[in-house]
Image 1 (cartoon, one colour):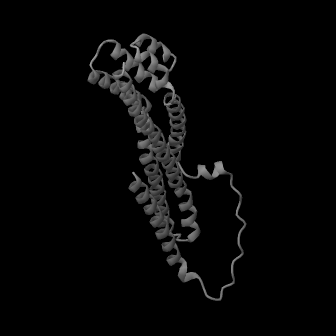
Image 2: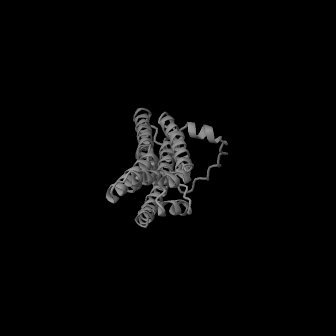
Length: 249
């Protein structure tokens, strides 16, 4: 995925430099050494919205992907933060009851814990209470932990997909714009730096927007996965502490 970002960005830069060089070479013969410098024209101010709208039709799906990316990142972050909230005293709450074999009491003591850690421990206590073997208890707890991880990872694959699609859509938008520029040149035979650069900067807006959306999706994907990895590591440690508490019961 990282190589796709680099190759797309490099291709866009090479394309832009090639067109600028082509335009300079084409109009270089018409410039004379002693010519008086032309007066700089005042650039009209353009709003950010109008500027983005110059990117063409390919900017529409990119904007849609941006809103969906932000929605997934915020929704998944809030969900993972709520489900992976860790209570450092959760084992201490059930240890006294587990030591004396009062499994129903241990279960009721964490009944209000709706986090992913609570779900795994509830399954462990239920399995121990049903006289399951230790290996079966560990297996059941691991299955529940995997289910919780699967819930946390829901829609994260979409972010990985967007991280690859958005820059590609932007690049396609730029390519289509460049094709139109060269087609216009072939029809009008007007090879000027203004004609080329004016059309090129508008078409490269879609590439820039696609790269921005791709970077946001890429960063969000790895940020959320790091939170899930932290949960997966901590739940393994918690499971180990739980098994030790059942052995002392």
